[in-house]
Image 1 (cartoon, rainbow, N blue to C red):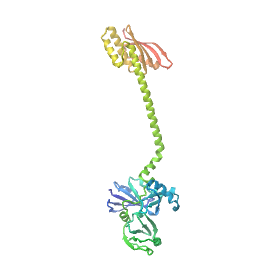
Image 2: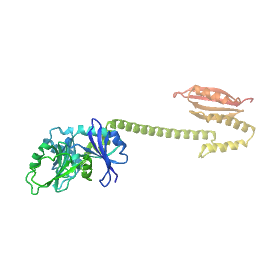
Image 3: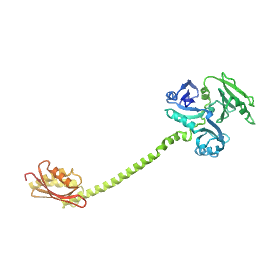
Image 4: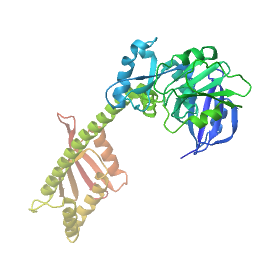
Length: 404
């Protein structure tokens, strides 16, 4: 288990804090430090942080609510306590402790404004805040006693594992007298600063033991914190709740992003389907062109390979065949780089190659002619060019070698 940084605000508004490092076995390590929250954060690297919240800002009570599901209980508790509260439940934060022996649930109630002020200040640091605990529940206490810590004129009284209240010294005796009739009156254990007189406790029906302390009460809090204190970081202030608060403003943006991604995938699917269909159509046109060029071939498996085989066979023919192959090779080198072109048929006679084709427009047809004649060894004549209903140009080109 990691060491703990026990942190308490003297004034959140003035950024005045005090802290103490506590080892995993509960022993203080080093002395009490004071300074800003940034100073505390600089010493908190690798430590779990426990923040003590002033009990003057908290109401500690208990409630009988059926059920064991903590999330459902957190929703039900505010309305079970509504009549006991002076503020609207929407403006208050409720935290549950562990169920008590009598089946009731200890509850801490604190204003959301107070919690927001604390969490906003702490969120601005990189500290690993694990718990926020009312300081009255960190006073050392045994099971058979009520313990009270006197700080100046204020007394923090811890009655049980998760019960307590704050009272000024002058009214302590009156509240102790309201203990009521019990079978066994627990002992009262008073922690009083060495330079102060203990408050009046004459009305307490049981034994009273006074222990003096000096220095800073953080040392006492470190000794009484325990392993499972009532943690205020619940609900919207829990770790998961913190992510919920961060995530909430971005929900609409994330939803739009998700819709955009889905639309993009849908568009990609449509494009893939369209391109796949066009690829199939192009393959069918290649097969048809090959069959026109080689009608004696009965079975078309791989038009490119079969055409190459046909050309290899023709190379073994006479001069006329070699003239055809030369023209076809030079023409093919240019046509293979032209997009949006369909070959309708190729004929060769008298040293001339006539090519029937369909191309995107007249400008592209002219560009094709220039590409064929760029090397200076071909003459090209456009014999016909007709624009069809689909705005594509159906044309015929006559190609022959220079000097023939």
